[in-house]
Amino acid sequence: MNAPLSFDAAVSAKIQRMNDVLNLQKNAYAKNPMPSAKERIERLARLRQVLLKQQDAIASAISDDFGNRSIHETMLGELATCLAHIAYYSRHVGRWMKPCRRHIGLLHQPAKAWVQYQPLGVVGIIAPWNYPLLLSVGPLICALAAGNHAMIKMSSSSSRFGALLERLLGEVFPTELVAIVNGGGPISDAFGHLPFDQITFTGSPSVGKTVMQAAAQNLVPVLLELGGKSPVIVHPSMSLETVAERLTFGKFWNAGQTCVAPDYVFLPRGKTAEFLSRMQAFICKSYPTLRNNADYTSIINDSQYQRLKNSIEEARAKGAIVQEINPANEDLSGTRKIAPTFISHINDDMTVAHQELFGPVLLIHEYDHIDEAVAYINSRPRPLALYYFDYDMQRAKEIGRRTHSGHFGINAVVTHFAQDDLAVGGVGNSGMGRYHGFEGFVTMSNARSVMSKPRLYALRVILPPFGRIRQKIVLKFMIR
Image 1 (cartoon, rainbow, N blue to C red):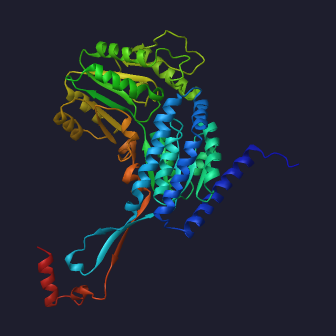
Image 2 (cartoon, rainbow, N blue to C red):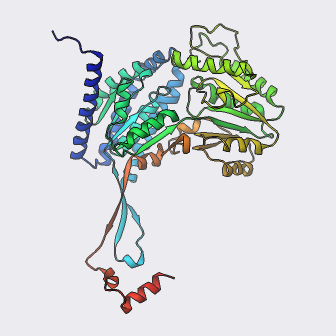
């Protein structure tokens, strides 16, 4: 009987396996570098079939990883969204694959030109733990629609779901087309250093920098969908009841562990008390209890839980006002659940002022003039999403014109992520590149320019030696 491998040997073996799989996928892609629309749609159909068949097992595994994750949140926010994306790409990919004709300048006539979207090859996808299905399978859908092969690195915090996904996709896809990699630490680091044809990463800006640095060693292009502090601005004319209802939904879905969740809100001066009262009413209606409520999600692990608790207590110690809304006044110890928490009177010395919250915690600022809110947001790193509440579209467009963000939401939060035909991505500190919709297809394709000349070669008129009459006529015509 063979002796068990040591930890270092096991890690080395897994890293070697990743390299072997990448080579396997590159060789398989080289044999069929431009799969037909029919082949791509069939691959998406296989993915759809396994997701539908195994939906209960998927939701259960994700809940187990969290300690408690609402089954309905997984079904609606992840599974249904993935299925909608599959249907959307299946309808449109055939048209997107067709050559797109382009204009030819007069001097270069006669000729034809077009852009052909061809697959990149093998795409590496690094998925986070907060939406482990949507943020692994979502990019995979883009990759398959664009004709690529893919390797997916799952988060070590999603170990149960990662193992399940590895088994399920292994049943419907050969390893040379789709492969799942599980494990953390050196496995994650080695994955980022592999010479993929593109890497898609969803996660924090700090880890995004590490991924980009690793990818640069092989000049691998990256799509980074990063987090940050997504703000909300509420205009004085807006009903706080409407704002509270929509923020309750968007902020406390998945217990705030959403990259596009609101992080802080700007209210007109003197409106905090009313706002908190409205929020309390909707929170009590949505989550009348917390401890044993299967609809209220736990924080993913002890490390994230302690980070949040420490940030809240630090803010309190430095003079912030902290208000928890715990409808049934339950003891939440041992559950990794944190009651919806609101923090006001914040200053820049507090960690919460700079660190993405990524939990059921919302910061509250007040303004005397809305320009103060705009100036504050513009002085910070550009967010993944910015939300504005106001039914006056002229004012909304003006706020949009004066700010930058990956997404600009008017009177709605978070739900843009589930829209099939709306590109998702960040700007600056919140990321680069886009996926979802046509932009996802383009990002995971090579937009290859093609130009074809016939027998007639009209450019002969400008060939050297220069100074001839016909060249002077051409220059006079072209440079004017």
